[in-house]
Length: 450
Image 1 (cartoon, rainbow, N blue to C red):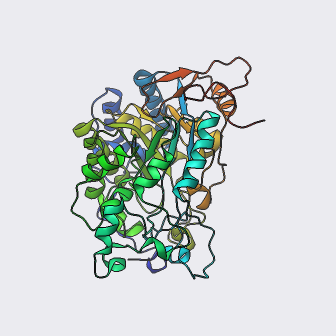
Image 2: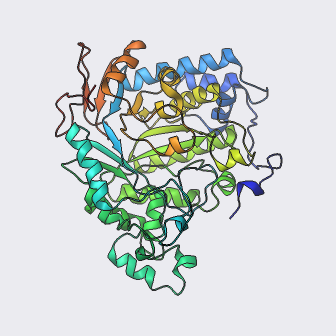
Image 3: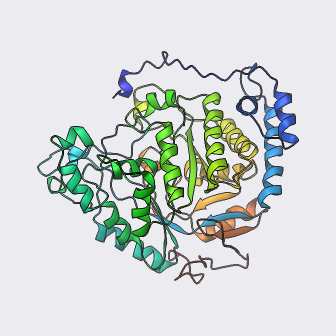
């Protein structure tokens, strides 16, 4: 497994580079006519012309305006959000992704370890308490994404299988729970604990599903079906990063490859669970990689129809191994953020919803992205840990009143939504107080006391 320190910042060479044999104007004309775009078309739009260096500002504005009109045609003017809480179970992880500062070495959590760390592992009872408190306040979605703790198993039967290996630590990344100060329980235990009062449980990334089937020949569909029966309602299409293996080999060599990610997503949808899709960009990849990633997502949606939204995630670099080793010196530019959202809107003609992230971009730029093709503005979150630990600077929580103030500033209506977008409710701007209204205990009371 490579380390960031072993990478030569000037020596990264990729087979796929952002050059095409057509012009920007041809690609733009196809997009304006509503024709299905090719990868080369996306590259031209992302670069504002692959034959020239830098971003052409006039061309960029044309792409943004076209995408904004497409957004209005597809989903209308409302900006949506969800009242949710993050409950990440553990930071213990030995995968070694070079873009991540969320994780802590799992060895640091073992009994007798004197390693300093700022991480955590929650028991199922602790997870339930977090979710119960949020649901009592009116939250109706819990998002849970966690490190790949070596003691995590799908269920008790999976523990027994993993313990049967001669050297489970090296063969299947398994260490018995009794070796750790805190037992995270099983995936089934955690999901059952978080299934509180009808809350929508959005959890188990493809990488977590891989962890939950390691050491077995079980299908992803069967893994997700077991988790669905434990309370899982939908799965996040994170762990995607860039779905081109030559990039994954650099930034996350210990993770599943592109085809395995696709297989896991198809397994989730085969088990009856809707999914989201993501892209984390702005590190070592280029515009050709971004366009190829969009094609993987669109092809997956063509086959399944189960993707509810696309979520672009701009790389937060400040406290990551890639940055500390000098492999990258920044994340994506504001121009790149805007073009990525816009081109996603034009390219992903089979996915209605595109999200702007205040966590990654902040309020001001996040609102700008809502005029570049995005229509959703994330959720209240209540607690955010992954981006914060990577150096994010835009806070951990947004109230419904915050949403009213922000979205009113761009002259767009605001609406709550369910995770799957099947139910929306307009937020009437009447002076407040403002709180969620779609959850079991949601009656418009603010999530937090003023």
